[in-house]
Amino acid sequence: MSREALSEPSFYILLSLSGPLHGYGIIKNAAELSSGRIRLGAGTLYGALDKMMKKKWISQMKQNANNSRRKVYEITDLGGDILENEVARLRQLVKHGQQALAALQEVRDANV
Figure 1: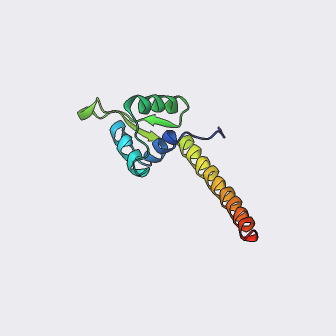
Figure 2: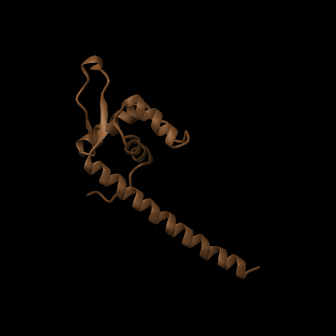
Figure 3: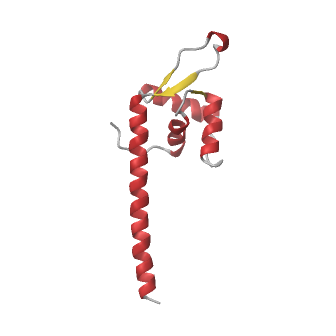
């Protein structure tokens, strides 16, 4: 399993797929989850979705006969594991950052 950090867009794409979604839904959800910080363009989104499908992190659901043009994606078990590992990695980053800031504050307080 990959231990490399996910890009922020990839992270928000996987987060968006907590339930099945089509491309435009992923774009909207990623923007909402990130408070507007992540604005996925169609090219970025579909390039990332293609890579994630090749890595088997997501899959494309069978198409609905009523709306055959709309592709719907869902996260796989492997993709869920990748997302879980990324959240654990980010928690560790925050923990280390908080420790470093606490140590810095102690130095500042000692110099007052």
